[in-house]
Length: 257
Ligand code: NI
Image 1 (cartoon, helix red, strand yellow):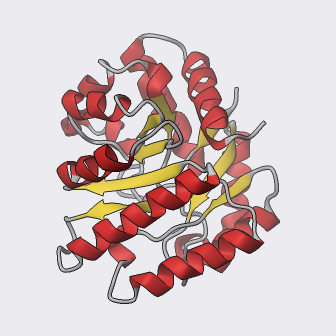
Image 2 (tube, helix red, strand yellow; image 1 turned 180 degrees about the vertical axis):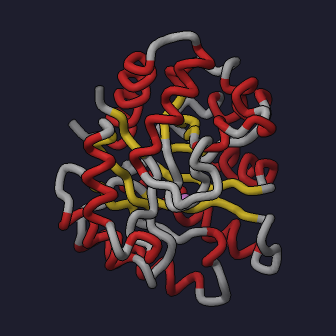
Image 3 (tube, protein in one colour; image 1 turned 120 degrees about the horizontal axis):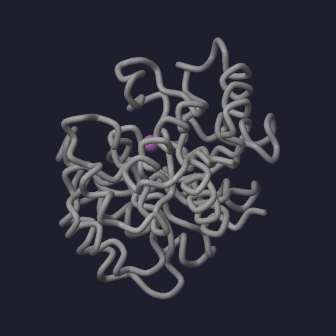
């Protein structure tokens, strides 16, 4: 069985003391490939280093996270383009719009999101979309720019069935499911039950959002197994079926063997 964590921030300082062990535990638990989305220019070198330290296991992704969009966002986007010209990346992100933490730079967030969509289309790379209290804003930008070249993931999905259907109407997109699906009161399992597993990829978003029964602790990629098991229960299939389908989805989306 092979599981793929399509979203982990393994470069963050929460893993500085035991990063090697986290990767080893992940592999031992069948989670054999990890995609590593960037935050901003302060983390790019760490993301690149992950790909070099763990070739064939860690896959770097570069972009500007919406909560890092400030007055200097144009320089940040230039930084992204410069790195894209000298290193191999497997996606653009994470990007999107976050209106939960701060609305000060709403316009700039939309601008940076637009820019990264166009970049992803130009380079043929998948886009990692972060949406927090911002589905309407995200949908209106994607409605405008979607075409047959655009593909990606709506990461850490927590929306309604209507929002899931809207995402799938874009054709090139998968829905990223993480630890929240295991939280009793989230209601997400009921929504996911109505979506075909063929539209899903799995993610931890570690170190955040550890699944039950690890909830509240530092999350790590090995816990992806708990998320896969929850989906197996939701769909009444075995965990191998969930692993096979979601890993195929991830490999195809990120164009890896
Ligand atoms: Ni993230």
